[in-house]
Image (cartoon, rainbow, N blue to C red):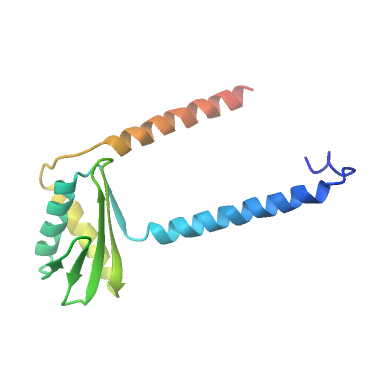
Amino acid sequence: MMADMRGHPRAGSLGALSLISLLILVVVVGFMALVTRGYLVFSATQSSFREGLLAALARLGLPFEETMAAIHLPTVPADLHVAVQGWIGTGQVRLKKGNGRPLLRQLAKAMNAQYAGSSVATNRTWAVVYLILGILVGVMVVLLGAA
């Protein structure tokens, strides 16, 4: 497009738009990196996520104090931020305050072990959305390849 616009009076604005779109991409990727720190659980209901998290804390022998959206671990000390969107089947655990990244990894492993060792209620809404998006992207790739 830039080669076609060389003689046009607004040819430089296309370069500026390209830079702005690159800047938007960098900001969005940076924001997503900050937002998604921690561990995500897919296909979880509110009750199965809570039960898995509390069982993992018990398995690790960690005393905790539970509040509305956080779990305080006084022996570490650290605060875990917990967010569950049961209607779409996702939950997130991340460090809100404290220095316990290795502990967060251990907690995720203990939650995985808890889920693997028991049957839990699931909500596969998000998994179905990903499946539909994957099929649509696959169809788009095939159609673009045929064109």
